[in-house]
Amino acid sequence: MSKLKRGLLLALGVLAVALGAVGVVVPLLPTTPFLLLAAFLFARSSERLHHWLLSNRLLGDYLRRYYEGRSMTRRHKVMTLSLLWITLGATIVFVAGAWWLRGLLFGIGAAVSTHIMRLHSG
Image (cartoon, rainbow, N blue to C red):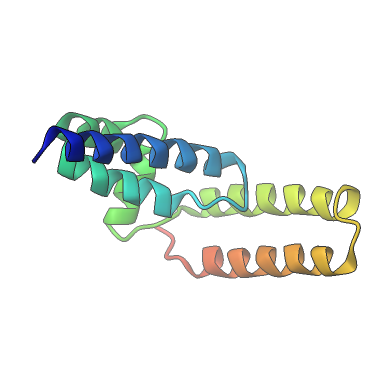
């Protein structure tokens, strides 16, 4: 693999990890797709970074559980849904002035909640 391609894969992997990490605390930014993308990019560009990501104290367990098909624990689901609705509720009440924006945010929250509730608890 050329140095340019490897460097590009590494840079995109780092960006994906950063976006995934932000997604842990920002409810509407997805965590899982970015972390899976980072794992994919690191697997092709840096064995060291791939190992680091999978063994990371904060993100590694999340990825390993997803790979193994165990997805989210019930505790994680409760925490995620609580944070999602607290943040969305505050945004709907204090920020979103237009009725259509409030409806859109509520609809996104309902869709994300449905997806999370359908994930296998392990």
